[in-house]
Image 1: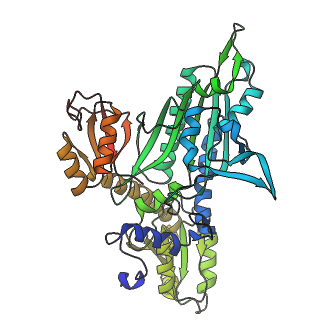
Image 2: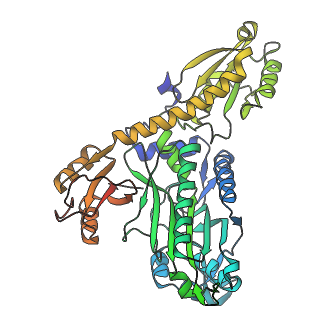
Image 3: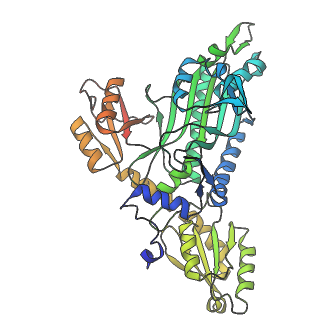
Length: 476
């Protein structure tokens, strides 16, 4: 029966990439546009992003930040000011060379990120220690000319927020960097039910121009990792390049210390790949645009629709509820809302009304529950919490089951082939070893976790004395 309903969706075990593509289009999240690698985010996909965005925006403001907006275009000369930064972004930038039919005197970059714009602005508005800290955030679109693209995960244009802050001391900037990383981790774990590993990126993997980059990494159903949010500690590097100085309490000129942090629509890709199944999306209740979908059964019979609409009204105090009163068959509706990952389906027909009950169907387990109408509000609130918790625990168990240890290179390679997922292995700290691992296995260092373990004494690659334990994986 299940197979018949979802015959248009490739099985995830058969072809995970095709399964993902099927889901994003059939669940009405996106449509393809006429430009390669650009996607149209449809209302259901945007409602999902809106929920994530609103919750994150609330937490960003709670931590004292203000929203601003920077221009879309950056003059080439401005991008050139921080050497490492421009080199890091050069392969991905889109250039504007003409305004109408006239060639521009100076090329413009379509924003790939806004560090240089914030730096230019901060130079103009920061003068004294009293002006610090500056805690700014912007919600925007950015463009990066990717070679290979996939909806949500890697597109030419995507939506995100980027925080940019300036502080009096290096310690203050570091505290901010970690604080915002923790905000991202809380959104992933509490709202999206995605467990994350927190840690620092290696020198090779850090953001271009940063002193240090911190990341949250999550593991997808197929054993590949996804960088789910990053927070960068810039130190005074950008401030020195742009001349952002303030007068301290002793009247001396000092450079500010900066941070930058970003969270993007690619998190929707993570949500799909962590929780989805062969029937479609599975959306955690806290993130779901619609938490409960009412499907009236035999709705042509007297009283069924009236009863269903009354239910919608009475339940709206405990959940985001919608109703499908279209003339499509119930079977079609069941299939549709399973595909869209709506956490709970509520079925009600003439017999249920007579028996003063409804049927609730959980999307995560497909379990059916018969609930008396008198208890419905309480049961529904409990059920949504239960589904949220279950999805997190299921994802955590999957990650733990796909996390291995390796003490030498042969074991590392074998594990990667036979049990794709995170590999905990020791590292000497040399970029040469990191590059060799990537070259020979396709796995990259995901992060040096804050919670360190001594897996062995030796580097998994060269066998020399190890400095740190690193999470390695193939990644999106």
